[in-house]
Each structure stands twice: as C-alpha cells, then as structure tokens.
Length: 108
Length: 476
Image 1 (cartoon, one colour):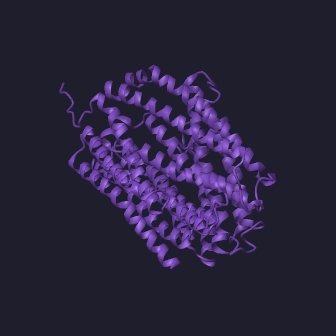
Image 2 (cartoon, chains in turn orange, cyan):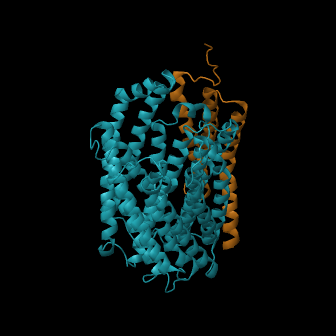
Image 3 (cartoon, chains in turn red, green):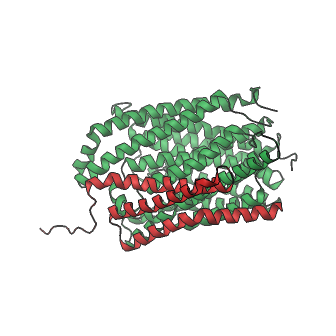
C-alpha cells in the first residue's frame, strides 16, 4: 500500500496557541491603532498619543508576519497578508479624510 | 421633519412593534432551546427521545435566524415613514403577511417539536424538515417565506419610489432584493452534495457576511441620525463606502466556506485573500460610530452645553456594542480561523461555534435590540430614554454571558484542534477522545452557566422594554 502524499504543511502542536493568539492580536492591535487615530483626530484624546497608535500598527504587522510564518502560508497568502497590513495602515487615514471633507463641505 | 406618519399613530410603526414583539418571543425560544442543547452536553440523557440534541439545536439556530429576520423587517417598517416622509404603501397587506408569517413559524416549530422525523421521502422535505442546517424549514414554509419576503420588498420599493428616497432607503431597497433573492439558492436539491453545499453557502454566507452586514450599516446610519443627530450627508456618504467595502470583501469571502467541500483548490487563494480583507470594513464601521459620536458631542460641548447628545441611552449603548461586537465576533473570532492553513484544523470544531455565537450576537442581535429600544421610545412618545437598573442588568448579563460562552467554546475548540485534529488526524476515535478531555468537559460546564446568565439578562431586557412606557424616569 502506498502511503498517502502529505500535501499540506503540518503545523507543530506548540504553534497552535501562538497562531491563535497572534491572529487575535492582529485585530486587537489594529483596533487600538484605528481607535487612537480616530480619537485623536476628533479630539477625544490628546495628540501625543498618536505615535502610540502607530506603535500598535507595527505590532499588528508583526503579528500578521508571525501568524503567517507559523502557519507556513504560501506566497499568495503571504502577499494577501501584506495587503491587509497596508490596508489597516491606510484605512483610518482615508476614512477620516473622506468624512472630514464631507463634514467641511456641509458645515462651512 | 416630523409629520403625522412619523410619530405615534403611524400604521407602519405599529406593524414594526408587532414584528419586534414576535422577534423577542423567538429570541426567548432561541435561548431556551440553546440551554437545552447546552445541558445535553453536560447531561447527555437530558430530555432523551423527547427533545433530542439535534432537535434542540435545530430550533435554537432556526429561531435565531427567524427572530433576526422578524426584527429586520420590523426595523425597516419602523424607519420607512421617517425616511420617506409618507406612510408605508401596502401596509394592510404588510399586516396580513405578518400574521401569515407568524402562523407559518408557529406551525413549523410545532412540527419540529412534535413530529421531528419524517419517512425520508419527498413528504419529509415538503412537510417536516428540509434538512439543511440553519434553514431547515419544510418546503411549504419556504414558499410561504418567499411570498412574505416579496410582499415586504414590494412595500419597501413602492414606498421608496413614491416618497423621499434617502440614501438609507435606497441602500435598503437594493439590499433587500438581494436578501430575498438569495434565499432561493437554498430551496432546491442537486444529486451532488458538493454542488448542494455550494449553493447552500450562498444563502448562509451571502446573507450573513454581505446582505445582513449592509443592512446593519443602513440601520446604524439611521440610528446615528435618530439618536445623536449626526449629519445625514456624512452618515450617508459613509454608508456607501461601507456598502462598497462589505460587498467588495464579503462576496468573494465565501471562498473560506469552499475550502473543504470538494470545490476546486483555487478557492483557497480566493478565500484567503478576501477573508484577510473582511475585517477591514468592520474596523471602518467602528471608526464611523466613534467619529460621529465624537463630532456631535464635541459640537455640543463647544456650544457650552455639557449635556449628552444621546437621546436614547440604552439604544445607543446597544449600537455601540454592535460596532464593538461586530469587530470582536465577526472580525477577531472570524480571523482566528479564516485562513485555509489553520482552518484545516479548526473547521467543524467548537471554534466555529464560538465564532458563531459572538458574531451573530455582536453583529446583529445588539443592533436589533437597539432598534427595539428606538421603537419603544417612539411608541411611548419619550423625548430622552434613560438607562434603568433593568437596562443595565440586561446589557451586562447578556454581553457578559455571551462573552463567557464564547470563551468557553473557544477553549473547547482549542482542545478539539489539538486532540481531535492535530494529534489524532481527524479520525473517528480522535473525535470522541477530543470530547472526553477534562478541559472540554469543564468548558461545556462554563458554557452552560454563561448561557443561564444570558437568559437571565434576556428576562431583564424584556422587563425593561415592557415597563418603559410607564417608567417616570424617562423625559417626555
């Protein structure tokens, strides 16, 4: 009998927990980045916290990298994760810009 | 602008309260049968051959879907007069269809409970149970649902065409066509189980991760205008961005359901890419609520008035829970296991159940409960609806209970991933070994306890909603 061919990358038992934790942290840190950015922009919190927001984005990107590495993702998925990281970075800027422009046009 | 159709006396709003009332009853049924199923994990002999696990689970999930559909219809009937400035067209037919819908659901549930199993012929499909998870209603009820949905869509369209067609109404008109049309994909069988599952996911995924999310965006827009006086232009501009982002990532995100059902492997790439993008609109929705709240409150504070801009505190809290819960339940708990490399191990475990509980609650239950509070405020002519002890207990216990269930189910799922999948290779023995471990058993105990807390929170919620009209704490 021929052994079945292993076509998937095996994930080490010890890597499951870091994978789940890092994938949760992707959005936790991402949410903190977006939340701080928006809160600073609408003047709910002090300006000096903005760099902290970008630190959270860096942590988001690192968690995406860690998660992808431990999962042994292929080239395509790795690129998709990079797109997601850049998307999270740009999203609050784009959304805030658009919202603010509409706000300005309607109030001034 | 206020007119005779938008306040007390609007037939559309009266119909909305009927829909919300039956939705709340079904919500209670969902929780009760969820508790039965949860008890059966702890005590397998509980109600054995009376209400077996498969029956309790089926009613638990179907009641969830149907109460949300009822509350969605109610939400639309509630906001239509406000948005269009006219009474809903065809409201008499709307009321008739409501009673048909209620009668059909009652009969279906009674058949699920009292008949349960059919002869496994066409008779079963037509009169007892169609057998597809989440949408098990027999075919006669399917057609009834189609007729009711078409009547509802016709009312929405006719009213939208005649009255003021705001951005919110336009989005709802398009979204509800897709919502009703997609149900048809779950109404036929094919000989191939692969093809059958392929089409079934069109209903489940494209409802939940596309049309329902867009619906939530529209309702959130209406809520922000109603509760905090947010600028309509800003809110509606934002709504269009949300629609683009949700459909852009959500439609092809269906790929993450096609990993292991026998579809071609290119779905791995499609599913991975669009699933990775799916959290982005959820993050964006979170910004939206924060932005509007911050701007409106800032404007209020700058004018020298330090009072809150929120005129319905419980509803706003539930809407805020929605923005956060959607991000947490659909976003974080979805992203956990959305890539194929890890989904290979997690699909079909309690991880899915944990995600399902928090996502349905966070993304939909919260905002629909918020709409119930808005309806109660409008029905009783309340200017400022405040928190009460019951409303605080309700939100604390329901949110705490659902979070507790989610964490317990996640722990159970983790045990299954390690034991049943990674160590024992998804074998028959691995399936049972995974469920016999002490961590799995304890997680199920905690899930039951948290389910009870959720149910008690529901009791507080009902008490608060029913007593709002006579409660002197609210400003009239």
